[in-house]
Image 1 (spheres, rainbow, N blue to C red):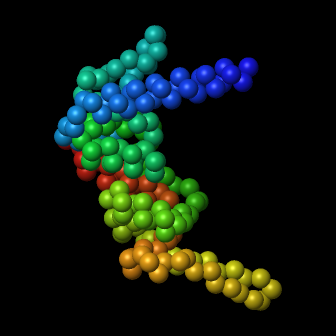
Image 2: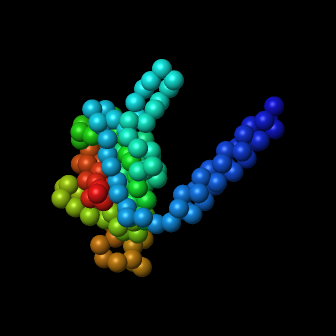
Length: 175
């Protein structure tokens, strides 16, 4: 029975690489990212499952979900010349009680992707490490940031504002 799972993983990997090579072979085009919400659907339901409501030839990659990963991927692929369509059920700012702590390595990745401005103007606070408090005593554990540029640090911010900035950045590549 385990060999069936292994065979499935191998087949899925080969198909995934095949699709990646196929899209890569199509060459670079002017990048474009489109974000859709249910009122402006890209795919529509039919009796036979899902069908295209738009021309499938106008899209290289479809991303379902415009969260952190979906928005970052849409921006990166759009910048690379791919025509990306993002499908999201609700593009309003997520409003839930959750904070976000982006470690310095995450901020370095934002720099690498060209998304560092997504933590600007959202009241993000720079974080330089941790502080531990117990029984009236405290200890500071700083991030080892000596070998990095001065703006590299962790960031703490409101999750919903960060998501919206990521979506806005991806949408800058539209048309």
